[in-house]
Length: 229
Image (cartoon, rainbow, N blue to C red):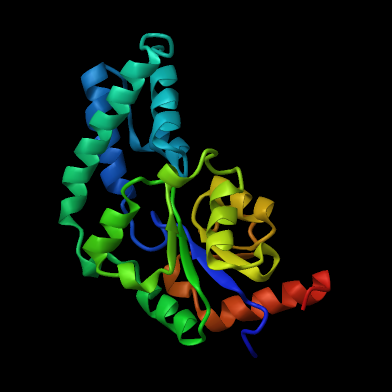
């Protein structure tokens, strides 16, 4: 099996490369507590793959405070949450890379396939630096480089364009429903990390099940069905 028809592989960060979800939860909870809004892990699930300001909007609405703040105040609150989060992720280290992911990316790169990152986190570079894997990514797009959040395809299209890759011949890897929707809206092949991602083209329960051989097999089968191989 060759890689001649795979032009790029683009990864989400949180929940795919490393699990910073708990740090996001702790930071949001600290802010919500300060605002007198009930916030728990169940509600936190609604924020997966959602931008910072959109997440705050959902939290405020949940606390019946949707109209309590100006846009400027909302931006200040979002920045406050981000400061809490940045302090928390200082604990990250290379051992926090999810099982098998560094090896997977190195295997992809060994076939001279460009690797990109598509994360709505503005702290993506900070996280990659802490994990000591910045050098494994040829291009990183984050919330600062796009106008539309997932499920809009803009972020994945931005990475593909930067890598000179045709989305129809590229693969995206995500752990959130809005992320999978973003990948598929871009025309890419979608790999979903999580059994709940039923709409993905390939689904694995977690990163330990993610093998490059399996991904290529599923991708090429899909390409043949679509007449793109």
